[in-house]
Length: 562
Image (tube, rainbow, N blue to C red; front, top):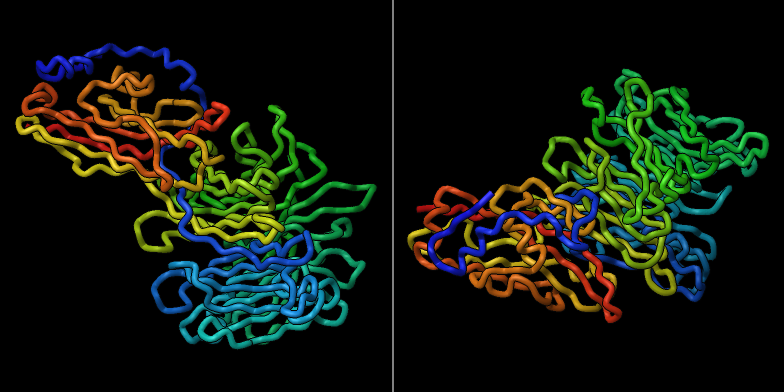
């Protein structure tokens, strides 16, 4: 391919034929440009114990409770101390989804009160038009559940288990399970201290147990619970629960599908690779992977070891046949994946919702294509472990999908933290077209997330460009949304014509920079009717000279007009 742009000698640099030896910049991995930028965060309170408060052990999206048109958020810190310094008193906080402001707070007042072991959006239980919320409190045999008004935080229901039962492990909001039109709850705990792990359906009206289901004689406690769409055709949402057995004669974790209406067991899965630990640490309903019109199912195992030697897998199952459809495995960039899973919306524009997956120990979130299973984006949380992930839709109404995450051992000493991320293109331009006869200046405004860097070293960018389209080209482990041609080769190797101003350089402390393209009148006459595409790559060089590429921006286009 040969591109000729006018008679200006500087422009003839664009006529170089494609050179495909791109030094160390070319490697393999998929990416589509852009990514997530942190909007706000909140952390748990400091504690005198080195174990910390564990803010973000559980989290959920409530819907709009303060009337600003933005969905609000809830999270818990079960190890937070009481005002008097009592250990493990616990804390639940409700925050604005618009700016992170604290709306409601519920703190335990005594040692081991354990307020906020789990939290959940409860739906509109009292029919006042405002979403309500619920949380569990207590440890082992004294665990309880409170449902509170989203309008004023008043207690709507205080649920005490039937004698000997406990709701101490987790809580999930569900739709109406018993036909009274009031949203209900799912909880998982035990029937007695030494009994088998049990799932309970709790009435949102009065807290009574609609049904309970002991998962099996082998499962000693449960790791995960999810409300999923109706799979048995009775019109009631069902649920999945993941468990771990401690029976030495049958140490095989199971995941169980349970009818939301009756509590009957519909299906049971074990790890297809025979891994005896970690299967079912997370479960979720995800995108329609196989195209049959039904949302499918995901099961995480962050402790599975794949053929490449990396820990972590997510297994995708058909909701129609219950058969295995695909396995998403850890790799060098995304390790020990599978501690939490959430459907997060369509990130890559292919019409299929994509999947967010948290890492158990590597402190990060990876987003995988619901269609192909390939990695699309990643978020480095930098420190801590025990992450959660929740897709929240376009929470701020800016047209981009948002993501709620937590890291319960974030900070020192392990206060934990909750974070809201919004998708960003990372680059925009001042114009989308330019007249060849008049010429002009195109400015590229880069705004990369400053908190996405490994260290505060030399934060840099490089502007890349192509005249052949936006088919992705692999560059240093990321798919840059530009087609390979001689122009892209120039930018990758840092060989810029003099028509560019600041095409590479340092990002400022906020992750921002501006580059420009200046075209003289008539210089682009031979390109009338064509389109140039541009993307910027962010990378970091620390004091030791080590380079980390943090990914490209989305492509911006420039149409050349007469």
